[in-house]
View 1 (cartoon, rainbow, N blue to C red):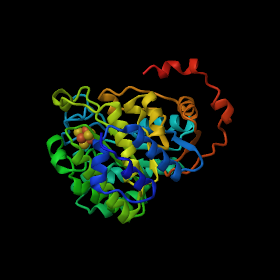
View 2: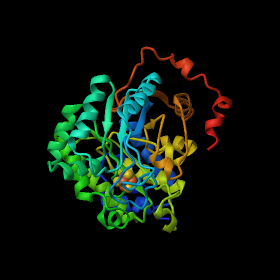
View 3: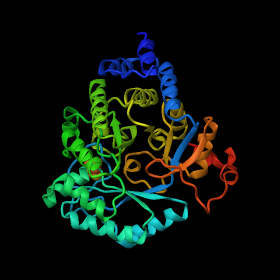
Length: 380
Ligand code: SF4
């Protein structure tokens, strides 16, 4: 086994890793060493021993989509009988339920609807922002912004400035999958690598922050994964607009790609990818564990492989669950997992600021769950 310790020592000394270093780490099986280094770097960024989570809700305003991604089990072609577009009343009801659970925001995304110009999205945001001025509207990933740009014939910057004026708070980094067209073109007809990056550049330029994501295991090799990380790091050097990086693995059930693809990433691959991302992306502060796709147990272990955030309690999720990820957790469960990994749990908002809920039960009450109580959800 290649000795990767000199690479890890350089990362721990604050030296920036090269693409070649990143390749060698991803090709290594020495994940205990890599994880320890990533844990040290996580500790350097987050000296307070706190691991955060957010209470928000995924709302999918439509499943109509005019492109084809072979890894997606969520979309429906326009005109098919099981398509939907959520009404404002339905969306408001979901937001009311989120607020009742102590939620601070919603993550709203949908398919690429062929008929919705920018006015439709502006109306939606304006209505929600007027009714819920303190709820953070974290909406529309780059492929959706690209779709609005095509329909309304506006630049990315104009689209984003108008959506921001209508109430958009920040942008989710979905739709990145693997930022390399060699892979993207084989599995999707949605926006290209350069277009995804250009939307994010424009997002940060108009003063909005965003997350960055990666979904691997869709026919990509280590080379493609390294290129993805390099592109994210370069853009972050340029804009500083990414709040967090969230990698996860392709979920194959009910997808066309899932029927074809032979290899799928293992738990080791996931932990290594997360840890190497923490080491290579030295300009991003927060890394999220994807317990939703990896299961609660591996999601907890991820907290010792570079992650400092457990993501959302997931009141509702329709996209990866359509592809086979059925993990669930409430606030008590996430707090339990964080505590049992040796950290202090802390609710946060979409920009990773700590949230103090006035009406929240105190920490003792929130942390009183026993393993027996939690076992139902833990049986993943
Ligand atoms: S991943 Fe998004 S863009 Fe691709 S088919 Fe599914 S809904 Fe449409």
